[in-house]
Image (cartoon, rainbow, N blue to C red; front, side):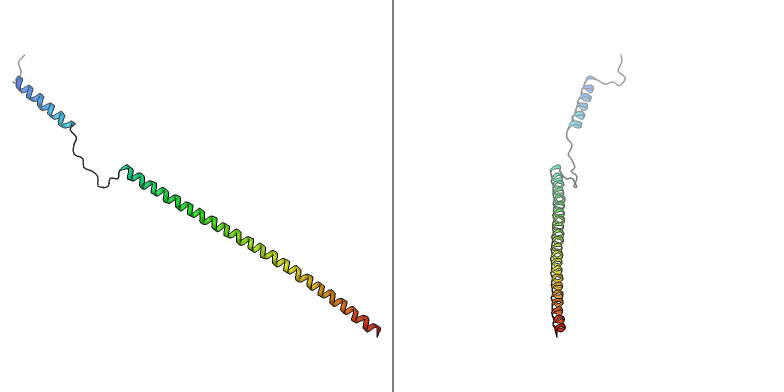
Length: 119
């Protein structure tokens, strides 16, 4: 069979060497261009962790404030109930005093009326 391209042994060896060099060049690592906005995984995880911690701290602070507000309301309600009980006690005492004054006046008036009736 006759070679239509007229390639000799040396030409085939050269072509094979060039193909091998091309394959090796494709396998060679290429210089990378790093993204200026690239954030590595450790930094991203640290940022996420910091965000979660801040959110957790905010939630804890909110819960603490709500707890303090609830305690303040309960203390205020207890103080108002105590004042109401004290006021009721005072009212009962005033009422008893008024009744005893009325009874004393009635006794005094009865003695006065008895004295007037004797005369």
